Image 1: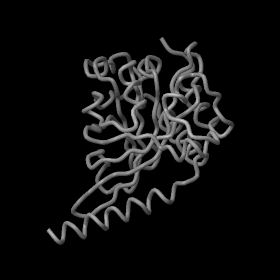
Image 2: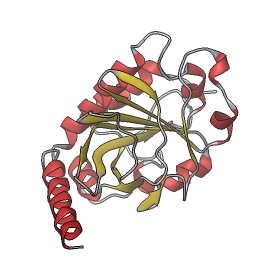
Image 3: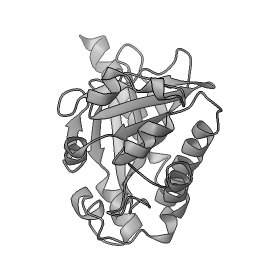
Length: 227
């Protein structure tokens, strides 16, 4: 028990250290946009365009870190943007934190890019909570890979959230059950200059700040319209 207690303390300290390295919100948005662009640039092996077009929101957590010894864990920060009412552009992003012990990082990888497609209104409603658990508060499935229409599996059509990851050059769908997403209130305040929650930011009534252009631009390039 004493060993576990020390291990948990070390893990907690590592988490604080990892998150402290990522306190620049604009930099995080740039990294999220870059990660998404690189993932979508892989020919015929990326996220199916048909699913992108149907998604309501897209969340990107760039460079999630894996830490811990006996008590494992994964931690990262990113952003989520939802479609504008006309579905021809992406709205102001809300900042997120993600953590969990079963994020599915590839063996030996030190960091992983995670992309989540929020497919319907119920999934969007989950984003508005202060904190929610993937697979608990919102159903999540490993997203199919490949640009062909055959990628639209039963899981893809039923899940509220489809999830993907990229580690060490390997990209594919990943199970995120048990992981948690929560609002990063400090980062939202830094980005918008005042305290704002996800419900207000993702309502479509808030103008995206200049610092978000790299992220929303990357989303618009890959999925400018929805169906």
